[in-house]
Amino acid sequence: AGDRSVRRAKAFEENVLPKITTLEESHMLLRRTQAVLTLASRLMAAPDEQACFEEASKLLVPLFKVDLASYGVLVDSEHFVLKNATVNNRQHARKFVQALGNRAIPLEESAAGYCAKTLKPIYTPRTKESPYPTQQLLYRVGLNTMFVAPILVNGNKFAGVIVVGMATEDGLNENDQTLMCDIAAMLGANIYSKRLKQSAEKSNKVSREMLHSMIPPKVIEKIECFWDKSSDEYGKRRSSLDCKGGDGRDLQRSTNSDVKSKISFLNQFNLPDDEYDDIGLVVDTSGMELGNTSRALYAENADNVVILFTDLVGFSRMSLTMQPIEVVDMLQDLFSRFDALCDLHGVQKLETIGDAYICTAGLLDDCAVEDAAKNVLNLAKDMVRASQEVLVPCKTKTFLDMPSYENLHIRVGIHVGNVTCGVLGQRLPKFTVFGNAVNLAARMEQTSQPDKIRVTTNFYEMVADVEGNEWEEFSTISVKNMGEVGTYLLKVL
Image 1 (cartoon, helix red, strand yellow):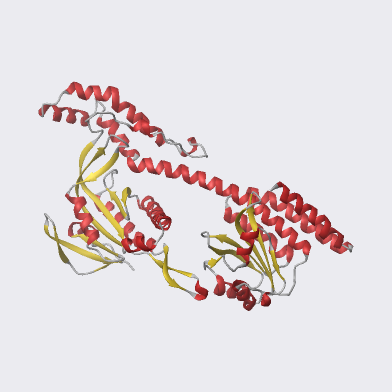
Image 2 (cartoon, rainbow, N blue to C red):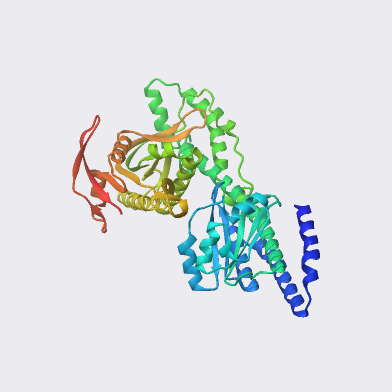
């Protein structure tokens, strides 16, 4: 990277400075050079990658009087998309969006692909003569000059491109091209640092969410109460063991020698956000070993719990046609949206199993069951809408043989009833919920339809008076070991 900078500076001295012949040209070069230098501090202060692009665009268009400034960002090893397009003409903006907006463009046979292979910029003074299909499209938009400079990390790792266009032919001189390469180099350095920070923050968040998904913080509070000798729960548990011939001394030994250490270990993951290091969380799971204890950390029955199940329509088919990383990325995108919606509606995420997402309300909070039911119904409708925002590649090709995408569709099932919950397992113990109510909620999901929500009569009666819902007619389904069950189907989209 250092050698590349030295070579670029030497080339600037040899090829650019000798061509400055007038005082006006000298003033313009000095003004533009100073503007580019001040950009460095603004990029460092930018909070994220998006803000870096915006800061660079604010400089490129007015300073160099270009008609288009955009950025090619990689979406995979073979495609990129043009983002953050800034133009000085509304007509160009409309035509640009129609031609290339939000499309995945193949790197092969594109100017960006040339930059990726050579790590060098490419200047096209007359786009009508360009061999690249993308630049031919931009020529029809009205851009006759194109300059594409690679955004490099550490001087040799391709991260994207700066794309600059002008309506006039051969509109950029060598001075401007050199300064734009400098802007690309600044972007590369700052984007890399932003991505490192973002990756560390995601690692921290994922680690904490992983642990909280195993045993939520409220469950840890219940565990402490469950083993507190002064609590009613402890007395009930001891009485139950005595009635069954259990050894009370074993209960005491478990409390003193094992459970307290586990509670202490779990509590360290419930610290405030500002007490965590920015570089992420390293998890030592050896502290979660429960040894040979046969005592459950916590268990209880809970009444009037709302359970929601959802899964993807056609997931098995998609899994066969997509690469493993594409499947996991798709689920990560979808479930991240669901996690945010659970937080929004005050619903507790329980777990994910394959493409199934399970959550509850009224179990770990003091919310009235009617309110919990309405919260879950609103969550379910938002989940159906959110799934439509997740795109997955399909086999059908679009214009210029570009890949096309399709929307996801989900089924949702909801029931309200009584459950048993507790913490199970010796290695990485996990909070779990089971019982007939859970099985019935799963059955509602299995018999639901794409983009619809099937609920039991018990649940429907709690939300029937909520306005704006298109409930379909009452119907019954057969459930193993339960007989005929009354259900209602809600159309969301």
